[in-house]
Amino acid sequence: MADRTLIIARAESVLAKISSACIIVASCALVVLIVTFGWLVFGRYVLNVTPTWVEQLALVLIGYIAFLGAAAGVYDDSHLGVTMFRDAAGERIRTVIMVIVDIVLAIFGVVMFLAGLELVKFGWDTNLPMLNVPESVRTFSMVCCGGLMTLFVTARIIIRISKFSQPANAELEEGR
Image (tube, rainbow, N blue to C red; front, side, top):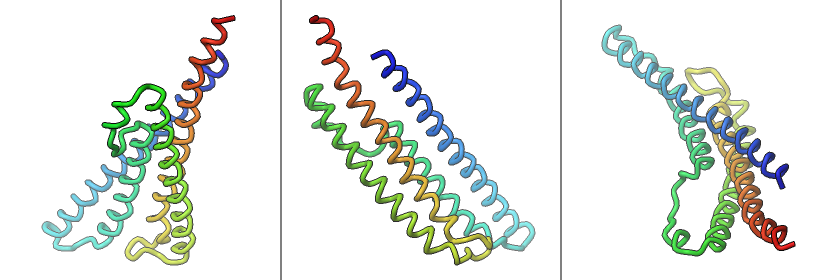
């Protein structure tokens, strides 16, 4: 039992670090986005030369900001949800509902991952205008989000089921 608790604690620590890395990368992308738009405004109004590559870079960066932020939101369990019925239920029913929601999120993550892989394959031979990088750079953020969502939610399902079964095991051991 102590081994399982230690494994869960280590897994949660690793997942928290991955989620933090997502937030750091998304934050850096946001800073780059702000700086490049500053350069766009400076170039257009001061230098009278509009850097045309900024729009394409902005589309790539916004994808990474949104998708990595969404994956971190799934880890933090801060994604959009209606919790009125779940909160009104008893503890065991609440856990079952949360596991069902997590299963649906995992399925969504797998679909996003697989669809994103198809888009990455499809766009690999086409370059983004102005940036001269493969189109797949834009859609790879979707693959990352789907994979991370699936990882985070699957780990959360395992942890919830493990914690759900823990009190029953503790009661059995006390009764002996």
